[in-house]
Length: 278
Image 1 (cartoon, rainbow, N blue to C red):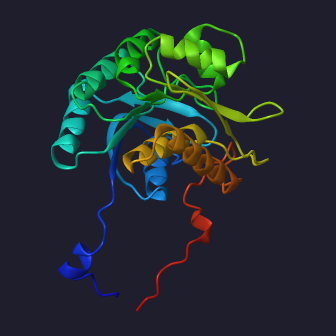
Image 2: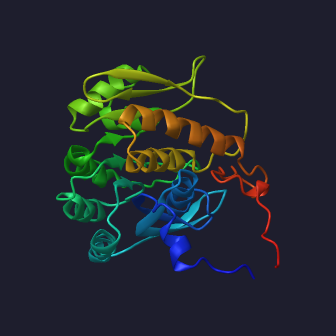
């Protein structure tokens, strides 16, 4: 076995920034909490988590969702804040109005950078946000957010606008209370993410890869964005870095690992090799 680091060796290493993800577990390991923790690690950030629901999920679809009691969600968040205070927070799949309300109550006094990923549908089409929870999300979490990260379809659903003009959509989302809006999705002849920070607009080029392994790309993107904010990046710089992390994760996606859309791979696990025995 390799000798463990001595106390002096440990203290000479820089302590990583911390980030908190508040989201749901994906039993297939492609999206949700699992994707977030991998994206945090990819960005050099220590990941902490509060799990709000468990999904029975694989590459084909979601077969069941089991919610955690809101008071237990609150307990997880408070435990992290008390001992491992994060430098940034992201939310992902929150599923129901009571959970969203509990999360908002727990975060209201934190005054930390907050990335809200309004996860509404799985790539398989499964509903990941109940219809009666959408209003609660917009009323309670949007005003706390530094930025929200809907994809194009989610931005259209939230605003009720059918336009594909990301500038119009992002402005509408900020008018609805979000601190900023990053509308994602590498579609069209010129694939871009579009960021509106409340004052200025930014087009962020997306590197598109013809890979059929995109499950978890949105979670990876928003988690990388939160991780970069935790490291001290500006919102614009964080958005550029997050786009690259998500693009690389798609490029390294695990095509064929299951019978459906494969998971993205933020850590490129196929390039890893085990450490020597001794």
